[in-house]
Image 1 (cartoon, rainbow, N blue to C red):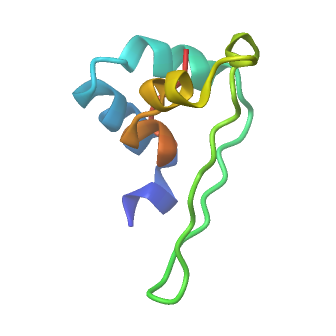
Image 2 (image 1 turned 180 degrees about the vertical axis):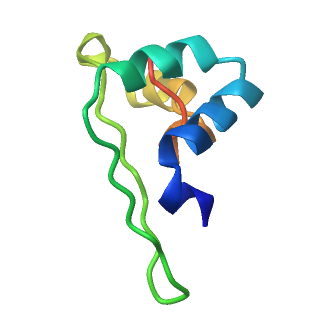
Amino acid sequence: ARSVSAPRGVLREFAEVNDTLDAMNRYLEGIDEVRVWDSTSEARFLVLPEMPPHWRGLSETELEARITRNSMVGVEILA
């Protein structure tokens, strides 16, 4: 429920656990809006992170090594 009412705070909490709080704070400062779609038992949402430009040309194996669970749920910044 807090992710709907205070999404920035929830993102910061995830980042704090993963030692990426500074990066998350910088990221959040650079965006104007955080949109939240509340899911139900009938609907689930998957966040597909945008590929960093310098990853273009990497092999599938190299890409798989860089993707984490947290990046797939939108709480980790891909570098």
